[in-house]
Image (cartoon, rainbow, N blue to C red; front, side, top):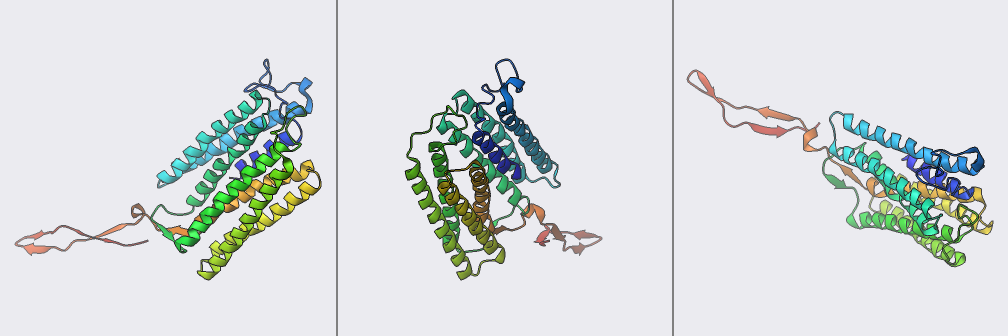
Length: 308
């Protein structure tokens, strides 16, 4: 989960330093070299360094898969999530290659960022599911509150999508010669801010609902954490806008987007728990026999499940 948020930040650093075409080819850095060359300078180093980090992400994904596979007892749910995460990483790398082939088309660059969002969600799910059993889901709040939490996830995704559109219309294209997406930056920023306020309002409503239905304290903590992340992200967003988008603040805002997504995806998970599965419950057999001559006639065993 940390690695996937980190790769979002390093990808942003590539764009903010105008190193997006530091390696003008893919999968090689140049037509004749797999790695960066001295002639390409610092831009080549930054772009190639981000490519190398993809292998770190692959290693982490393989580690998660190995941990899920070797777990005793093995849980299919964790293995499936780990496999999904591992298979998604190469897909993300290919989209990154397409951004190079299209000379940093702003819409493709935006897609490259958005492709990280499902991968982060998978990582959050793997993290949460690793700490709970595989049994039936038991809601901890009324269904209306659960639906509100899912609506939060949808609005948060829309906020991130509009944020990508705003970035594609702004000055940080990834290369000095790269065109922008042609959208009005001021108008897109206004739409983005409107959705942010909607997200904050829905979060406050969720917190009020959690108190009203006497939800567990753990669920309230997750909701309050989300609100704090939203407010901090909003402060950074407004500050960068009125300071004409300095690179450092834009990078912090990208980090905030990753953290925000982690926080909002965690909310629905906090509103339910899972019972231990039947496979995890030991069976205790009671045999009641009747003597018939010199032997005991045993009826069919009755099974009593004793929860751990």
